[in-house]
Image 1 (cartoon, rainbow, N blue to C red):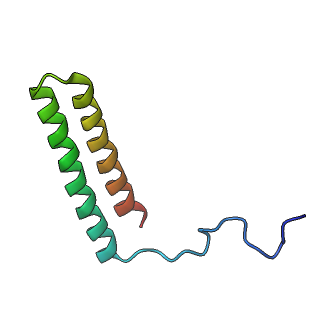
Image 2 (cartoon, one colour; image 1 turned 45 degrees about the vertical axis):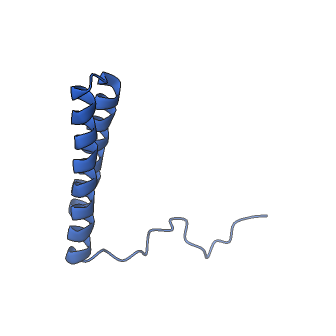
Length: 74
């Protein structure tokens, strides 16, 4: 079977941009999740669990990165 040439190849090509309010709300949720990851990382370091602390810190940074790209990209 061959692909139908009338169908777009990129499913997000026609996706509408998010409104500013929606982007800010998503960024706020991401900041809360990043704070939870950061708290887990700090608690793990205090408890002597270095690996878990590093993973919590990485999770916080990745979540902040996603929030920033969401605000920038729209």
